[in-house]
Length: 276
Image (tube, rainbow, N blue to C red; front, side):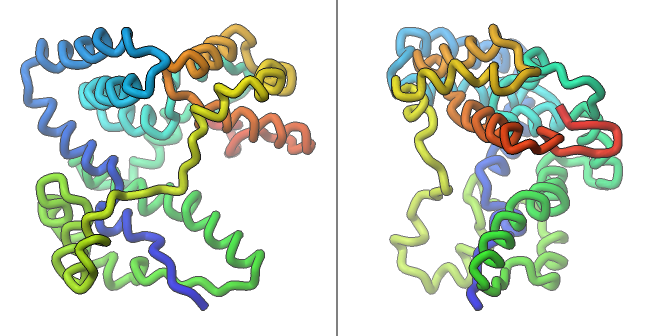
């Protein structure tokens, strides 16, 4: 039996998106002309750096400011999709759909919170944690006969943290403030001050490699409902360094392999059809 840290980010506000929600609530108090002008400024100064690694943090600042200008549901979707959701819809034609905006709206009907910070915690607890994060842990552990326990998901801790104010959970912009100021004091400073590291790989650089060229060009052939021209736009932006669309390209590869393996439905499905 082994212990995991699953649930720590959801229960104790450890994700960067929680910082994003606090930033958005403050950003929206700025005058409208300032809120619109900041992302335009970063868009302008990032253009000379196309193809350079310095472009990505500039574009990220632009996206953060743009997302801080919109409502919570649109902001949540913009972050989980990784590219413009309207562009994804232009790419696809799969018949009957359950629009993701409707799915999210239906899901949030049971959420009693008004503050976007707490809405995000609700979605993480009820949607992404059980249907994404824990699924991967459970499948891999069971595949290797390993018993998993997740202390951060103890119901008593969750019930306690539900009643804790967001400014206590995240003091200023510090993630997991409560954990850092309690048991975290027993840890070496090097661990407490270490940057957060996810299980990510450099996809944007991988798909610039010429060895992927033929596979990239065949994506629209393997996925019949994709628009060829829009796929080309995404590939070109990633190769030139204008955008970081490596994660989305990877998802297209996974989808193409899924279809090749004769799975009948290429997306998460509900009774009304796939979410798009």
